[in-house]
Image 1 (cartoon, rainbow, N blue to C red):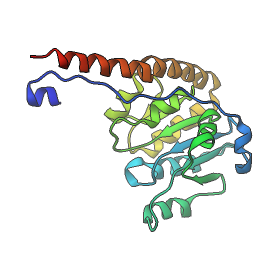
Image 2 (cartoon, rainbow, N blue to C red):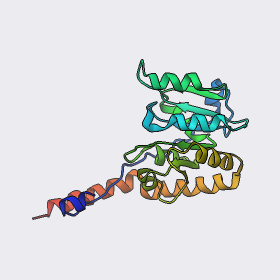
Image 3 (cartoon, rainbow, N blue to C red):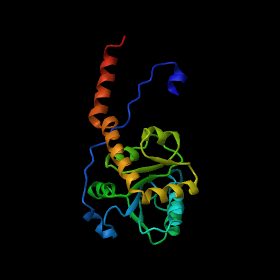
Image 4 (cartoon, helix red, strand yellow):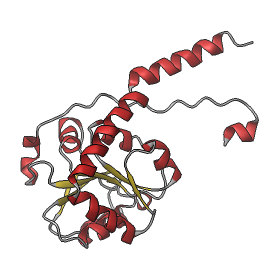
Length: 211
């Protein structure tokens, strides 16, 4: 877009992702989780992140698995309050999680879902993929770019399509495992900080010699 707008060369360098720090599922015991028994959503509770699509789709499915919705809204956020009010007993709200606990949620999820309507380049997708998670995301252009043909998508805004994809991926172990391995390798190849840093160094060096 900017190249067409300005008629100048544009260099694209993505955000880097730190190496995955895998953690034991024991850290999740306080939430009644054993590992590989929950779907993970991790984002701010704002409409553009699409939490309401995922909540509705998941609650239509008769499954023993849980849905972990990590994150929250600002105090007095009506949308966040509505999400929590509509949630059934299979939904877990750990709030904003960081550090080892967040690593544990990423390390032991059965599936990571990002149902957003709007994104920049979501760092959440490559971060989840670095933990060898199978990811399911809305098919907006920004998510497709981040996924790089790895992972699964559903039609943005379609609860029916999201429900259908969830039903399939929750029970198809081979699909999830294959996707997870490809995702981990892809992130290591394209989003590793060493790779990204080298790209920045190359760019800065080229600018120093530019006349």
